[in-house]
Length: 452
Ligand code: DQQ
View (tube, rainbow, N blue to C red):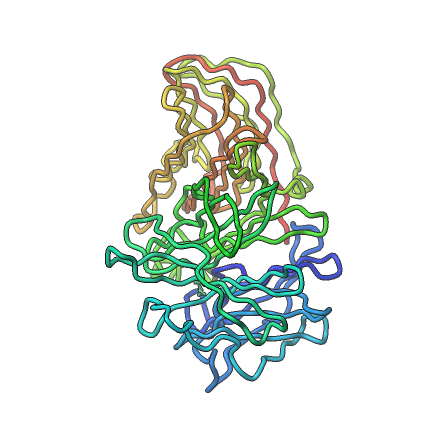
């Protein structure tokens, strides 16, 4: 899979669609896969929802988009490519089969807007209902005054989802140095403000979050950060659940080359954990793993209130490729706390999460995580925004590490990484203090059940 698509709740069940090539673990003639969950934890596969139609507008691929219920009818809105146009499909049999609307619903860029690309790139519709109208954002790039390209979001309105009027550009800008387009926009109200999520090309690494105001068709950001500091969490897509929690899912990319992926695996890419989004009192993004995952907890190791001298390590007697770890510690300036994960007993393979008490930076280091010479690890370091205590919440799932760092209600630092140990004994965990003693207030580790 690559991007999550079309998230929608129907009869209490969460439907996930996703960019998918049924022919193999590489990106080509993309279809929409489909899976359903009752609990955010276990997924049931449904037949492929959308396939390219020969000699039609999506013949080269059904690219990303969203799902809405319009007058009770489940509706998918997505991008057909070469050239990029927006398409629509509906289901009348409980989301099993889909009928495509005979014509694109947006067939060309708006008049007078110089959308970047040859042919112009505009895609990944995000649609929502407000009052009596439907609204849509499309991601694209537009030329800026300095001659470079800004990412931009085109805003349309419709009463029937089929005929759309162009209203204007909601927001534009650049996060990385060289931008060609914003992709996969999300715009929604949360905790009294608006949140905008976009993923940016050429960088192709981050889903960015901005929070601010949205009035008169203009989004005005007051705060900006990445949703995840790793280089593998991309194309984030959110959904509001029935209980009004807003969940974010991302595509977790591979951390190895396409050639290595194709040589070693029949699949590529994964769905992230569901992250509940909130804003903290400063309007900054708070992310926490959905509590539903607690039901996967099995054997537990627990130790509270202990000190670790400099150079001392604790090695919990829980092992495995699937672990959840919660840690709270006071790490003074001068001390560094390290968690070694997926370690072999001789440490020849191990990944490392590191917190530096002086710099208050949290880092994930996967450079020693694999003995496979084809795999390059890396270091991702990011500022920790919590108050005095260090609070870490980690999920390790075979080759995926998802880290949430920060206060429960504050702005969270998330880092998602990939690690590919080669040895079957790369299942150990150690917590090590360096430099100065560290006070560990709580350490809980669970072995996690598999979901299928
Ligand atoms: N992936 C899709 C595009 C989208 C990109 C193609 C983001 O629609 O812009 O598979 O990863």
